Length: 449
Ligand SMILES: [Zn+2]
Image 1 (cartoon, rainbow, N blue to C red):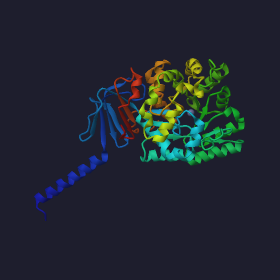
Image 2 (cartoon, rainbow, N blue to C red):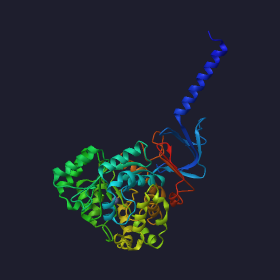
Image 3 (cartoon, rainbow, N blue to C red):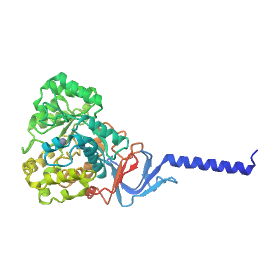
Image 4 (spheres, rainbow, N blue to C red):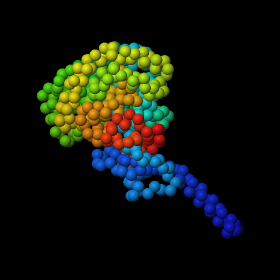
């Protein structure tokens, strides 16, 4: 029989071991004292306390209402604005800002999956983008990069991928990430192949070159597999046909230098937004490039920002640099100043129709780098287009999560959701472009910055 003293010692030891085991497995983190913009649109919460348990948010309160449990790791957030991790609803991880698509597509297909797409993902996460919709890349690479991020093998946002675009005919040399369809059966088969591979959305482009039967087949098959259809809106008939066949979201303000959307298109959008049973119609205007182009040409400082070079092999950095050496000489952008003059009016027209605008940037296209695109889009919405900062932030947090039907897990800082939280020093509702320097990035409870 052990003596009472030995029994006591064993009990103490045992309880210590149990105690240690509990605190180690709980991994409680407390973000204390920051000003929380939770994503729901209400007044910010001052002196907030957010408790994170593993991957998820355990509780949200204030220093008065929510005590920090003993043993929790405390992160002092006084003086910081806290908000849900940002979404960028339109990125291209297979691009890194190089100005020549033909050269890029011919040179780097074998380096997309292992080098280029992971670099883009890391840059996005560093900029506070904890979720991103990747619209157009080779299928296998898209799925594999998304999986590696989800498993924690490489850093990056939670990705929602389309894999290859669906269109009438791929442009020469782009067949690995653009699939042409010939007839309704082929359209259904291609969508089925994408769905079977596990894509999250279907990306439709140039639908004004497809037959009605083909578009209908794409949308019907996608919806049968519970996949939203995201369609380009560059030309009037792309919008008309997209609305007619029930796509869920449009991209870009489009219509080249036309001063406004024609009345029949606005009427069709309004008819669609009036149908409550279909849920909101989403639109991602990807508009900042128009406003920032001339500034960039005159002040190419952001081309020298080393943030866009993170994880990019030296030879590719050199190639990109050379391609944007004369930022004012890119044929692609010569029409941009004219488009800039009309895009604010078109943005305002869209706002009035009652659709839900989302923050998405086309990140990766010429001179548009993954570490900079999202905050610039927010900046233009707020400082050039008159969107109030809370609405702009919700277009990059709450609404994207709803649009991807994952709002039970993402989009706000709320009990039970994944802990995707970012923070910046200062008042982000007064100075939205503070988001260009994100001080803290937490994704699924793990701190990356
Ligand atoms: Zn795009």
